[in-house]
Every structure is written in structure tokens, then in C-alpha cells.
Image (cartoon, rainbow, N blue to C red):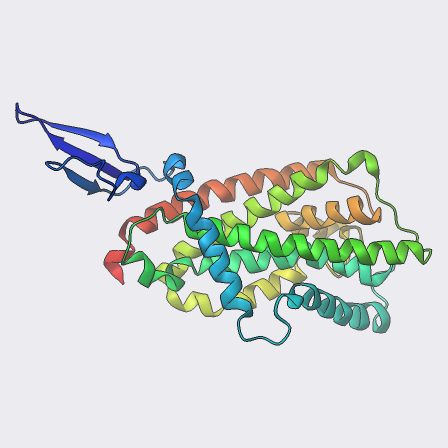
Length: 308
């Protein structure tokens, strides 16, 4: 938090919040000081300060895009090509060789729909989980709200998710035109944007929790990819929740991503039904993880610079 401290004639000081945009433009009195102090409450977020740094979010998003696709032959085409190639591998291995699952929906669309949500979750949570390690030089040089960096990752990957979703819709239209038995229940499509918001909130919450752990235990960053690979098989991506034996189904249902994947398949393919109590459980878990993640991230950001 940035404060303007101005002395008075009676010896007392006047403290007031300072807009960062006022620094350097002559709006700060000459006989005054600018204090930057940490936030002492774990859950206190200065949304006004984050809004004032909104241009920094877009700058970081642009930096991520340039760093990811600079000096590549195909450039942004990888947005379309990467999920398609991964889906083809899944469809070949699980759909044609193992004949799993048998849902009546084209295996390519079945896996593509599940991978859409999972890819966004794993990539966002991994990048946010390495926030402190990837930006320690930047954090040590200049002050800005530390939550800006994770928010930029959420926005950046959301833009990629949008492009991949358009690709999915194109394939959906092709299979529908070819006579595949797929439907979009129009009466439930209002859930789709809410599901996307929950996916972003869950990814942010899990990533913030991981960022606090990787800041203290740096070797954890090397096993995040492996952990998310295991998590993918604990999520109904290559199978449906109904195909899990009843005595083990509750374990998979505790995974908040399970309800997101299952509900997205219902909304986009009509392959199963929405289990409302599981969706409510997933929403509560998402909210708890987000609050816990913000608390841990705020606590870690207060003294992270002193430990690097």
C-alpha cells in the first residue's frame, strides 16, 4: 500500500492513500514523504490499486505471448494445433485401440471437450504456482501489487482458451454436419459462462496456494508437471464419472475439476446429465481454495523479497 505522509506545523503527520499515477507529475507536495508499507491483513486486497495498474496486466499478457511464440515457425497457429494434436493422440490410443469410453459421442469431440478445461487449469495453475520464482528479479526492483502477475496469467490463458474453444466449435459443427448424435441443450447453455468463471477462479486459487509453497520449497516447482499429469487421470477426461465403480466414485467426485469437465460435456455434447449436488460441491471447493490461495499469497508476498 502506498501512502503520502505530509508533516503539519503542530508536528503531527497527515497520512492519506496515494494514487501511483500522481508520483512524478508534480502532484506530491515537496515537504512530504511517500511510504510503501506491506498489507498486514491476509485477505485485504486493494482493488482500487489493482485497477490503477490495469495497464500493467495487459503489458504482462503481451510479454507472455511474445515470449511464448517468438522465434517459432508457426507462431499463434500453435493455439489451434497443440490441443488438436493432443486430442488426436487421445482419440487414437483410448478411442481406437482400447475402445474407451463407449458413450456414442465421437471420441475426438469427447476428449477435446475434456482437454479444453483441463489444459487451461493445468497451465494456469502451473504458471501461477511459479509466480515468485519466475518474477523474483522484477519483484525486487519495483513496487506494484503482486497479485497483478497471477491475474495476468489468468487473462493470458483465458484468451488462449477462447481461441481453442472456437476451434472446438468448428469441429463440433463438422461432426454435427456429418450426422453425429451430439446436441447442445439450449435451456442449460446459460451455465457455460458461469462454468468458465469457476474454472478461472479454481485455477487461480490452486495456483496461488502452490506459489506460496514453491516460494519456500523451490524444488516443488520441478514436480508440478508430474503432479498435474497424475491429476489428469484423477479427472474424468478419458472416462465418464458414471463409469467409475460406485464405491470409488466419491473420491473422483471430490476433485472440483470433475464436475467442471462433466458439466461442460453435458452442455456441449449432451453426453451425460448435470449432477447438481456435485456441481455445488465443486463451487464451494473453488471458493475455499480461492480464499485460501489469496491469504497464503498475501502472506508470502510480504516477506518474499527478504528471503531471495
